Length: 240
Image 1 (cartoon, rainbow, N blue to C red):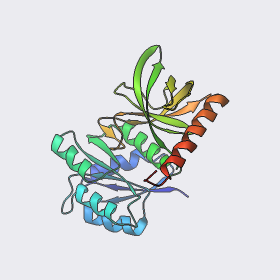
Image 2 (tube, one colour):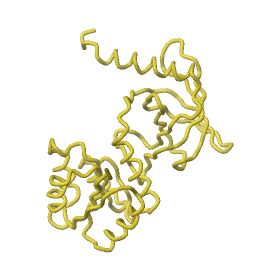
Image 3 (cartoon, rainbow, N blue to C red):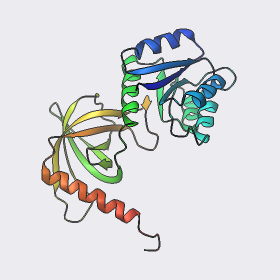
Image 4 (spheres, helix red, strand yellow):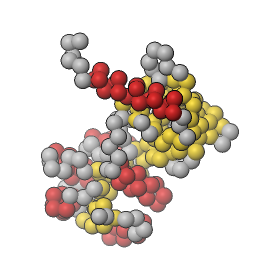
């Protein structure tokens, strides 16, 4: 069954452009011209993803986003707010609790990439564990350092201001923050970006998520044991 995407904007031209951008994706698209209509449709249709402009008549995008996140039946709906790169408007989007931010005028490639990535996240609920360590990265002969922010069996999130592209391949080297851990070196592919203009997750710094490639069995076992141990520790009573 196709995913449902709700587009919300007070401009019919913008809605037509956004619909065209999503035309080749396996999604069913719905539209609304204001926040009140968007909220009504969200409650009726239960969309998987909402792209919403901040500047809307009546109930604006921020107020609508807050209403969605405060509704227990809609709280898990992913909302992308879109606004010009103006400090006050970016702050309003962040305060509304949106899952991602896109700068207006929208970059067409970023618009599609965010949709692909966020809809895929609805299907992947792998356990992600907070984890802090230094990551040495190499891409196309260029080396840079980032911070390991969280880890799952199939990948990590790297905090960094280095510009990478979705689909780009790189080599990673890091050591998990646990006694006796060995160095893990593996290939990886960038699958999503948490940028300044496209902030998918406000709880994470600027950076990018990667999927491991050709991870050897020893490294995979080390990551698996680290995740299992972290989960067990998190479940211990607080007085321990």
